[in-house]
Image: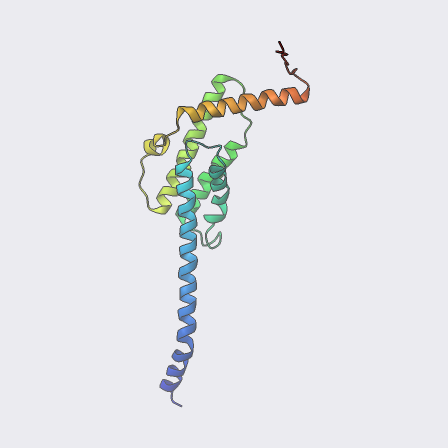
Length: 175
């Protein structure tokens, strides 16, 4: 057999193998892209409801999804997302103050950090959003906020009753 014959045999045997590997590589890229898109869409959809399970789940998937093939082969944009995520996560773990003036400062800082994170993810995904749109482009009905406040107040009262810090008022209205 000549060198050309060997090349034909090699190409005949390796062609299908290489095609399958290329298809697997394309499928892996597609899955990663879809996962990144899902995180971005979830965060954008829930940016006005940051206590929602969907929002928290999306936040918790960022470090895994934007990790890249490895730390050494991570893209600059993936690294930007991870840096913004770590800064936001670090701030979320800080104790929330009780003083009203300090609460406003903490909330403003959190708003800035989540905007930085959304901006980094948008850039990585190829979207162009201005910071105002990322901050204020969501809709949260007043009724949802009122419902959240009522649920929080009810829960706090129930905890005080169960801890014995507050009595449960019982009114007998029998005629």
